Structures are given as structure tokens and as C-alpha cells.
Length: 310
Image (cartoon, rainbow, N blue to C red; front, side):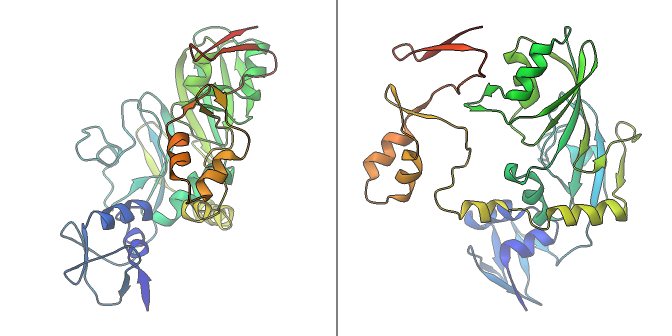
């Protein structure tokens, strides 16, 4: 039986498929001493090496829940002294499913199964992540309303989310996307600074009473339900193969000083005959996303800035 080289590597627990593809493209993977290519097949008995290290076949599945302390970095990079792998000290090679900011704490899942990573992380799969957040001043009804409705950060408007106030200056928030430092950026946009951020749940998996710095294996029930929930999830490579589907639905592009008409980006990506048009689109700047309905906005094309007033 043959298996694709990237799947073979990911199932061994060495890394995810996407990372395996990068190693293959860089010439770091060999099969019986010959440099592997994207799409190469591996048969039983063949010797696979990644940068000279022999990769064994599929390992026993490991998925753990870890209560990450503040200061630990969600990376396997050995150059990072405080990387999560060193902090956990697991006997098997594992890697994090997604990230949790260095300044944040709480639930982080780690696994040796490359296949499930993208299924859990991909934004369009709508998997819940719950956080407990403390900010530096009292929360208002306006703050909750605007956070729930979507905040313009990083060139997009965040997806609608659920917020439950827990105290005058703390709240629970459920997200279904994972932009870089998303909660902190959302709060900062509204004039708040995050004092504490703790992730308490990923899908059905709860932090509960797991102490900071400790980890546990998922229970059989948690694992079974996890596989059920991701069974029909779209993986990154599958979603990317769908033509005409933008990477981020809410992202707005600007050509010169005018907004590109709806659908232009998708069409230009499908057209191979107009390279100059692609170049102009690629070099365009992002216009700040449209704010929520309770803000009046004016846009000055010359200064490329956006001024808002309540």
C-alpha cells in the first residue's frame, strides 16, 4: 500500500502536512536516499528521512489538553527557550493545534496528528473557542454591543461573537475565528486594555480544574466527540482548491483611491491572461473595513486615513 509522502510524515507525528510540504519543497525530504517531490508516494519498507532524521510510520494518536502559563510560547522552535514543547516535556513528539499568545494563559491542545490540525483551526469550520477576559476599566453596554457586532482590525471586520459580562470589568467571549491577538486588538479599538486573558474552552473540551502548567490526555469520550465534530470539516488544502472563494470574506482591497468593485479580485485571480491586472491588484492597499452601524465615517483618499465619530 502506498501513501503520499506529506501524509506519511504528518501521521508519524513529525509535523503537519503543510509543514511537510514546505520541507519537501526545500529538498529536505528523502525516500530511500532520493530527494522526494510533492506528491511522491511511500510504500511499506521504504526509508523516509527529513533533514537526515529517519521518520517512522504512523504513531499512536496523542491529543492532550494543556493549561499554558503566561510566558510560554506556542511553538516547537528549539531556538525559542520558552517553547511549549520544552515546557511540557512530553515523551512523544507533539505540536500545538493553533496558538495562544505569550501574554495569555489557558487551554491549548497539542497532538502528534497532523491531519486534525487544519480541520480544527480553519475559520470556516466555525469551532467555538471561549475566553475569560479582564480589562482595565468598567464595561459598558455599548462596549458589549460593538464587540458582538464586529470590530475592524487587521483589514477585516471580526465575525459576530457572543459576550457575557461576568463582573464590572470582566467578560466571557466565544470566538469562531483566530486572528492575531484578536481579543486584545478588539478591546484596544474601543479604548480598553486587556489585563488578563484566559482560554477556557475549545469546542467541547474545557479547561475545568486543570492547574496552570499541567496537561492531561483527552478522555475517550472527548476524543470520540472531537473526531465526530471534525469528520466533515474542510481542510485547508481542500478549501484552497475551490475556485473563486476568497481567503477572507470581509477583506476589502483598494486600487489607487477607489474601492475595487465586488467580484473583481476573484475574477482577476481566475484570469491568467492579464498579468498586469494581477500586479496592480497585488500592490493595492487595504482600505480600513467598514465600522459598525453606530459610527459615521469619512474617508480622505489623499491622506488614506479614516476618521470616525460617534
